[in-house]
Each structure stands twice: as C-alpha cells, then as structure tokens.
Image 1 (cartoon, rainbow, N blue to C red):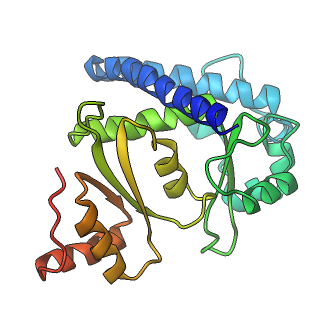
Image 2: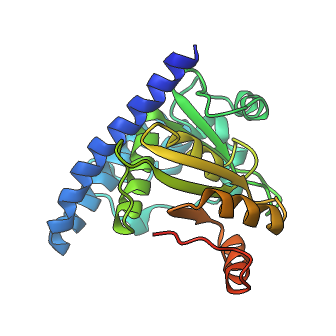
Length: 239
C-alpha cells in the first residue's frame, strides 16, 4: 500500500514538472498575450462553476456566460459565505463538509480523500476554519508554482546531488505548509521538516546539524532565526 501511495505522489510531482515546462513558455509572452490568456481562463472557470456548482449557478444567474466574462461583474464572496454553503459550493457532489472534517481529523501524512483529493484547512485564527479541496491535477499545478518560485532562487533537484531542504511549518497535515513539504519528499531531495511551534533553541540545533541549502519558513520564524544567526548561535548558509 505504501509503495502505491509513493508512486502516486511521484506521479503528481512528475506532472508538476511537465506543467512547469508549459508555464515557463509564458515568460516570453507579451502583456497582451498574458491578458488574453487570463481572460480565456477566467471565462472557462466561471462556466465550469456555473455548470457544476449549484451555489455558483444561483450566484451567477445574472451573468451572461456565453460571452466574455468581466471580472468586476462577479459578486464578491468571503470565507464565511463559502463555508455556510459548502456542500452546494463544491463541484463534486460526493464531497460533503462533514466528511472532509472527519478526514482531516484522521490525517497522519499526505493521504488522498476518495483516492483523488487533498484536503487542507486554515488554522481558524480568524474564528472560522476554511476547508479547501484540490484534485491531483490541481495539486500538481500548485507544486509547479512552488517549483517555479524555487528555481528563481536556485532550486535544482537531482540524483547526483540531493538538495537539502528544511521546511519549518505547521505540525499538522491539514495545513498547506505541512502538505507541501510532504508532497515533495522524494528521493531527488533531502527533506527536514520542523514544526513552527518548536522552541527556537530546538530549531537552531536541528538546523545546525542538517545544514540546509534551501530553507522555507513563516516570516515570523525566519526573523527569529536571523537574530540567532546574528548572535552566532545559528550557523547555516542556504544557497
């Protein structure tokens, strides 16, 4: 079972690199080409939502979807509205909020829901938790965006030299900082996952021992680590 799970994750990552290759072509596009592409994708997404989501079908009843969509014509919604209407909001009728909440409570690593979805949640610091569902193609697209950002900063995974990456994030797999780290944990890189809730002394000791070449963390944690580096207690040199 673990082998099948690992192979599916590897396929998600392989597809992410394929998507990244296509995205990189956009770097040479003109402003007008980008705007036309954005408009085309916006219209496609709105039509899909109206076709598959009863919530959006009602919300966009006044929108003429047989022509170019104007973003400013679409009503604004917030997290509270989304969560109050969640079962009508989603485009897959099999997905129910209660079931997703049970799934996230039982998460132990990077498991799929219904064999095809990743379910993430916000922390609820605003008083309301948001729940977000991505299918495997969407997750690969998100990974492609992560890799694109990393490549701008010199990220270059490979078998000859396995890049040492430290991810300091949430301690629970329902959060994106945990799942992104778990999602790229394959043989091409060496992953160190640390919890943002750990004391700064523990983080410093772990980082000094691992010597990451690539470090990702919340800005609040990064600022504390920068102070530790200035004081001489942290001694790392990410590329």
